[in-house]
Length: 97
Image 1 (tube, rainbow, N blue to C red):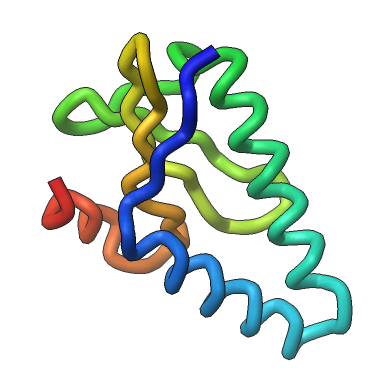
Image 2 (image 1 turned 45 degrees about the vertical axis):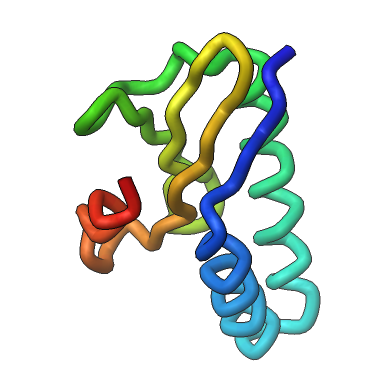
């Protein structure tokens, strides 16, 4: 099974989203993190399932939250380049390539 690698800016994206959801309702940020972790697990098991975007990256849509995980799969790893809000600057992650 390939290992997951993260772009360095992912941590700040996730922390900001977590804080925002926690401010909305106690525990909602935890639900966001749990869904992200489930997404990573599914992506690792079935990396070629979701549609391709630009430059060979793929997009996994979260179910409960309006976010997508943008990633690229190689035989050795899954490189997650963004955890993006679906309504904000959809191609901002291209600057990270």
